[in-house]
Length: 221
Length: 140
Image (cartoon, rainbow over the protein chains, first blue to last red):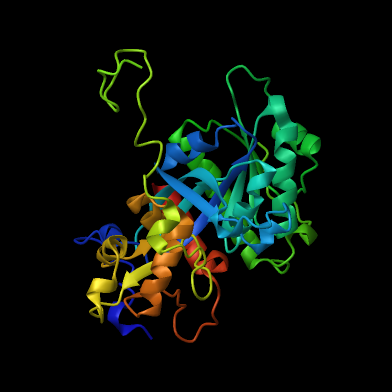
């Protein structure tokens, strides 16, 4: 098909590190959650953070929300967000996007969640309510997600089953505790998410994760 | 302010600085697209990967400075988000500029292909790809 850049054999890495060649395929992971819950911290723990501006011209779609008659295409809305990249071998790159939590940025969420591998919903036990919007969103979109409770030093500790109940999360959705500052911990969250996405992709009901009722193996440990 | 002070210079410890760089470019972002806010064709995904085709531009003089930079960066595959960050331009602006380069055949979108004989699946639901990602994440 594309003979010019055919796939390298999987074991052709002993001399040449192909990570410098740029990505051949990119996968998106969203890190969502309420304000101050540690989204940027988590992205920074596993990748190098880079700034990204999305100064979007308000299009017809958003003109329906506010009456901007006469303002024309000059009207833009600026969203600054962080993203990070994890470069794996064989031209695979994972892009992490810390998504602004406020509702007015949901046009960005739509763009980011389209074709996304999945999402991490970061939660803070002191403000669990702040996670509801994200959880609802990904449930509706059918985006695979895990809930990661960022264990702040001064917050009360709860077990994942208690948090699952408080947030009314489906039994198949992994709930885990993490420390978003720690690379190892943040990486474990990503591993749990990819495992979950893989289960959904290989399951019979991959198009409607809501219908998936088989409890995950005892992740709540 | 003290008129003897140079804008942009640090003004002593603990005091405010003029944040010219943070205030953004002097040129309004969509000036570099000649006012266009929508790219031609399908909007590119934020992580669409772009590669220069190597074709010489028919009218090099018509390329803007930013487009020449984009073209140079795309000699190696670059995702749209990387390009926006590298050029410090908003994603929407990059979309328009890259759209021009796509239209004139100077860059191409790197298509995800599944091995011959296997049905096409999008990368984020490709089980083989997800397994590879999982193995590598665990090994990091």
